[in-house]
Image (cartoon, rainbow over all chains, first blue to last red; front, side, top):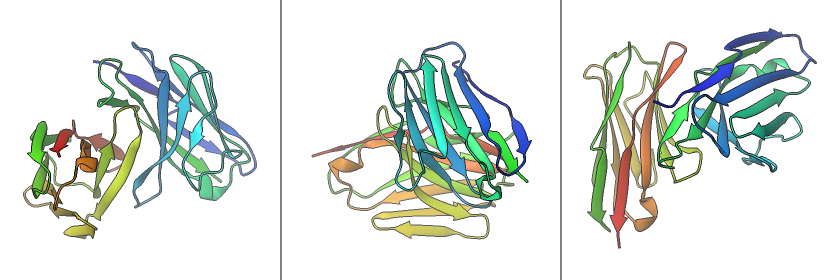
Length: 116
Length: 110
């Protein structure tokens, strides 16, 4: 089946630095990808919709200047956490809808970010 | 390995009916269980989150229960409306991994 990968799987960075997380659809094209964030012991929440060739759409309360999303190709979306702070530490997951059925989504394995 | 199944795969009901969506997981060692709604081409919308220590959560016409001993969660939708038509996913957090159910595609007919 279709696979979505994320890189890196884990990253630790210092406060104030920027971190880039990649989401790739490995055997299919995705004009849209979704980014989610999970807070410890809390729910998984949609952050933004990444659109190939156009600006991302952010959910209410998500700072677009802090979480930069670039969908440079039909198989790659990147999420850059800028000027990271400890409160940005979280688990970030991306997903991409199936080309055959938009009711089906494929999820990446996630990236755990720890900001010291 | 934790696996999540959802029954039924698809469901079509007339407007106004109460309905139940089922989610089963193979390993009771989940931290929490979350129900999402997915509209075609859209990201997941969180509906309800049940922590491991909880048994149920309610939001409006939605009620979700969690029975860890049997490895089951149910999503109850009261007085269904055409706007409820969507795919509903249950997602379990097992350790540091998320396990996604395949979804139930719901159609509520006017």
